[in-house]
Image 1 (cartoon, rainbow, N blue to C red):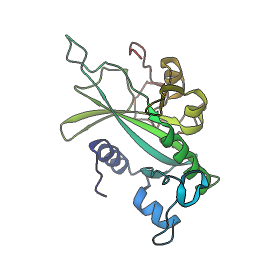
Image 2: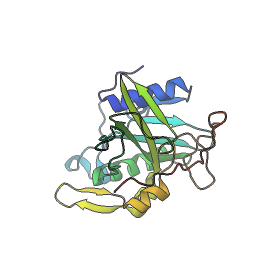
Image 3: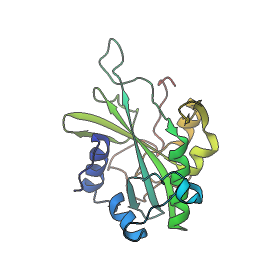
Image 4: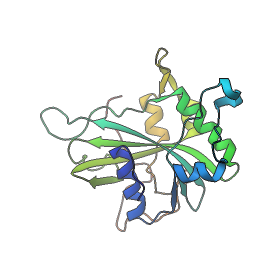
Length: 211
């Protein structure tokens, strides 16, 4: 397993490996695209432009191949219960959006950018809140994924100063999906079968979480 800097990325990579989902880590993906010593600039701005920000994984699925940017966020325990149930943050930077769009163009047809939000919960997430839950290294994580194009179409400015954007609560509930569950409405499904006996829909409910 490649050495990932953040525990969110390590948890997601372990999730892929345990489910035998084919993927390539970003370092290998960059080597395949760029000649030695080459640098990519954002928006084709030449030497004066900022570097194109890396994403994290290429994940190969039945329906589409995904260029995945991991966004680690923490969900604090709900006061008085010890159960994770706080705000589900969905913010990214404008550079995240622009860079992932550029990678999507570089890879071409058959590849789609997506943000995967990996939520670190202080305790096991409540039943029914998430369809995909990971326990790793003594921590609990839950996953929500959203296609880049859908994110960009509904994003709102969060902080002009820090160039961040996020999704309104309703938009995040409507557009985000479990990572592996197939869905007719979602471009993200990998075509994997859900766990045997699971009665949860492809879009698990996230009601009751304030945004």
